[in-house]
Length: 229
Image (cartoon, rainbow, N blue to C red; front, side, top):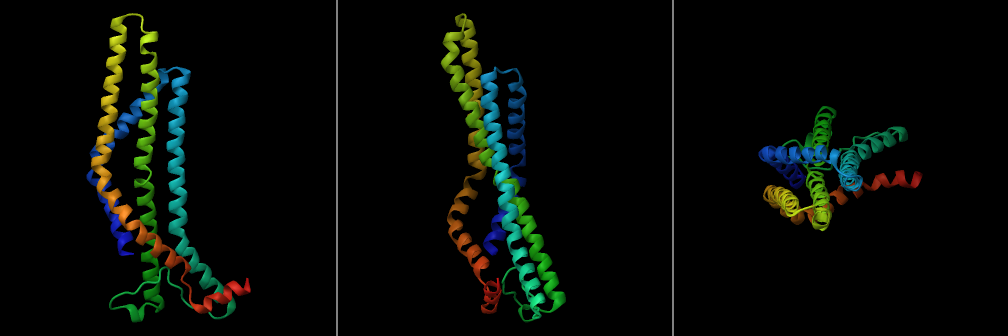
């Protein structure tokens, strides 16, 4: 839990610390979409394809974050409901944690309610942090890929469609300016998020193991529920 909490707080702090550069990237993306109004049908399809890819990435992370954050509360509530129907009601914590100083009192209804509510709030906070942070880089990368595809297609046609050297040079200049802008975006993303992604790659092994343990760990008496079903 400490690893999860530190990761979520780290992501939130990065969003706050780099909010200026992230805001600039978002403005560039919005400007690209506005410029796409005057594109040809083929270029509009390219922009739309990568925009839809970014939308799909966001939807995926919303679903994943919701399922992940609600998994533990649903498990706890379902088990407590099952024990209530069975006539052997007992409190089931949202997460099986050991607390300093209050561990012997965590099953007292008032203390249990406070701990349950605190863990639930943390789950919601973690979900919002994942929704806000994790799709950000993939969406930016998807957009830059779309812009690179546009530039590639224009570069192939620049000499064919150019009427004279002046027009060709002007088109090449526009392409070069756009490439510099794309490289600046990529460089900004790398500088802002490389540390976090390295940290996440190294801690993913522990997080997956701990999450799986929390999901499958059930008291021996809980197997009665599975048998009854």
